[in-house]
Image 1 (cartoon, rainbow, N blue to C red):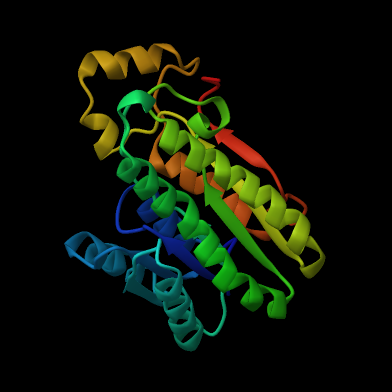
Image 2: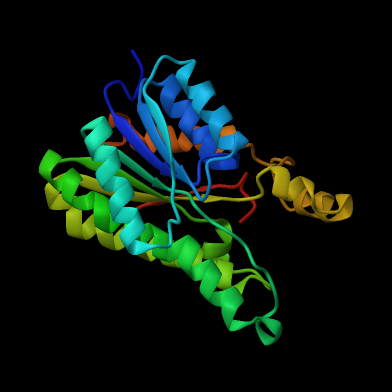
Length: 247
């Protein structure tokens, strides 16, 4: 018996990184998985194959998560093919870093659209489905910089802080329908993006973390599994920082 037996999960931006790890963990715990990415490339196709190895239904959808109408179409397709949506993970995200004085309007708009508006789009399309089911779990992938801020990332920090406010509000609005909404705020996670940083920068980050290591995508997936499962049936409106106590 898995923690997510019989559940259907929809995960945005899951071809690689944290989203991929969540998708694989969900499948290992018994869930069928629908996931999106901007394009369905080799990475997305590999994720499909890896989920299929668990013996569960899976489909990848090409989707611009920042597009409202496109999102509704994807959610409609997921319902048609999977029959229900029990878990929504808003994981799609980008960075376009820069100091405020040098940041362009285009940099600001792109990050807010992909990181924050996409979550609104998918929640707006999915909540009616969950309401009819009288239950569901929504998980927004925030960040510690959404809690504490970070110089040079005002657009990213604002988008991630917005995801926290969004989850807390949805938890209050939709709680009477049995729908829970929470946030995960990862800290320094070892990934392709962080591996590209200079070694000195990575070492400085590690020294700020009491556990003296970066987190893994599996660390995030484990918390996402708890929040998606019935083990967290009374957990809603919360922000769980997965950061090795770096705050």
